[in-house]
Length: 453
Image (tube, rainbow, N blue to C red; front, side, top):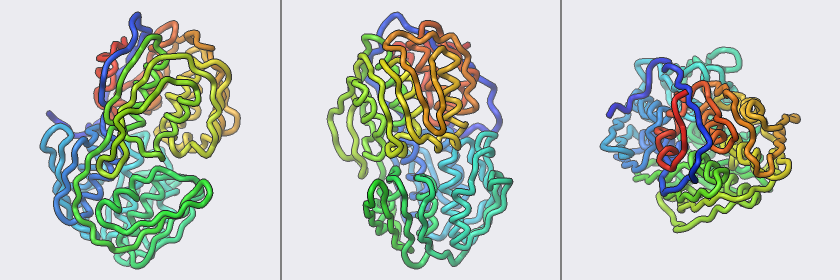
């Protein structure tokens, strides 16, 4: 099977989801965690020896990372579905790529690779698709310039971006102006080749997969909790040694079938092997506050990450207020949480969603639009999203949603259509493959009615 990422713009793939006549039911696994998959390939390339990866997400975003690591000199091989081997170059020994690195739609890959390249004495150029080229990179390139790297890009540091790394990186002490796991990770990756200690202060705790994986590969990382935030310290120039990785199911991907089950009456589904990192489970906490019937079974540790099986049953939902402090632990899940709020009793408010404005699309605006065009009363107040729930009655539906090349907007809209009175259509579902291969097929297997528009 060809797992190469697409090299050209794919034709639009409109889909329609229709309210079903039967509940959703079954036992499934969702694709591997995208954040961990990206990092597994990157750390494998930076380590001495051969890293074996099980459960790697084979969506287009991650395949772009695999190609980039090959271009930088690592031997990256797929042995079977989700089974990959990476023979690394060793820390500080990546090679200069012979061509432009095309990161497709992946902001995570682009920003983290900026960190890797910044402290290697090589030249590289990053580009991406139309969506990625529109996203700001200065939040990464500004601090990385402080280690001695040089960047030249379009306005706002946007791609295409030329990077000239430094042979003598200066360790940074940097306080993030906005909580961002991507910026934190880029700085830590750059700090691997710097003498001394790299320090990142974050105002709110963000996902810590980079810190966990650094330790897994042999680096010394310490974390100090300060209020809602943390101070992360990395000792530079560690020996990184190959280490096997088991990638758990992505909680951000699990969010879509979870919400679908909650809004389709009578549904009950089990999702096996989902990552339960406490800095990624804000959605699960929020849903339980809404009264969702969501329980965790068979909790365990795999590859240094907590994992469990989720059991979800449909039921009445109550409105919820999500505090700003919870945003980093569920930043990707707000579009589909908004779908759940549309079915709840009462008015929900999600606070402090400024980060959603710089995702694959302006997700804050796109989320409000996907609800509004389908008859849900919604407002944006500053950086807050306010949703007036239907009290358990199906919202009208019947709208066509503009996805803006954003996979999460597309999936959220398709989930919405499973519970509305009239079908919901998305203008393009092609980009779902970047993070959730075969999403529509998996949902159909549970009983969802999703068809070509």
